[in-house]
Image (cartoon, rainbow, N blue to C red; front, side):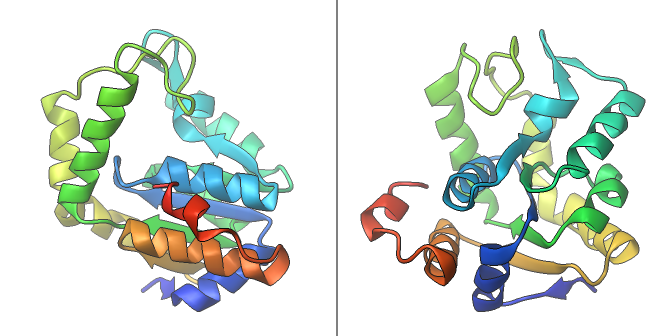
Length: 202
């Protein structure tokens, strides 16, 4: 079983963490959360979609090349990495100080996906690789979100147990909890963030 931590401990750990991994279902708010944390704590923002997986024209890199890139990224000193992909947990978890698992309800993830498509359709969103414009989700992608808790969450748990059972894992089940985490963690080192700024984040 992963070493789950409460929000207060997660906030304290986040405030002093050098390397943070953000995982979870697509559409849940991983990227927004990751970028907010990167800005607040001066961490390098790394996106598996942008920096590792995709080439222009939605061509996927070979798995060996992806793993080599991930290995290089994880060796950097201070970062927050946005991306799930349990197949690379063996490379990422041993270098991670804190895992943030965005685990929102399915309806929230689907709404987040719809909002993202409406906003960026036909253009390249900031956390995506160049030459990969936002497109309508296909049936396979929608099925991934729909069945995430049943099919993929258990794989996450098993992979965390296998590769680093001692890393603290904070489960964030709502956008409100993400906002609370940002607010609480900012107080440890940087003083309070204005509530209106946080509420506009998600």
